[in-house]
Amino acid sequence: MSIRLQFISALLIFLAGCSKLTQENYRKLKVGQSYDEVVAIIGKPDNCSDALFVKSCTWGGESRNIGVNFMADKVLITTSKNIR
Image (cartoon, rainbow, N blue to C red; front, side):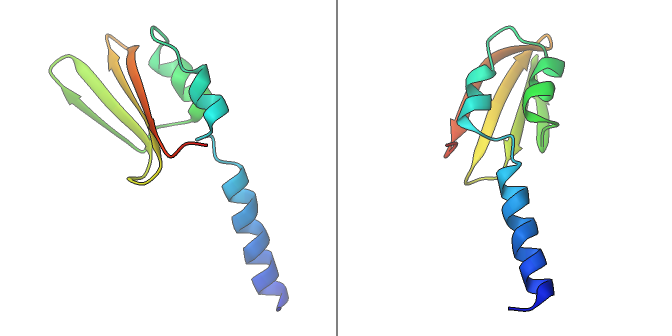
């Protein structure tokens, strides 16, 4: 295996291990936390949308994600998909 390929493989393993989308971090999310508190735990969201008075944010992609709905900048509900 070339040095370059070894480096790329090691980098991908490192980045996969650095994900904040873990069961441990998901358990830290609580109703009533602020948006900033959630960002401090799992980082900036990949996507957010607003509908009426609810802001819905998603971290991750379609197959693996954490979803949080905020009302008045406070956690209303959390969901997760394939978080281990």
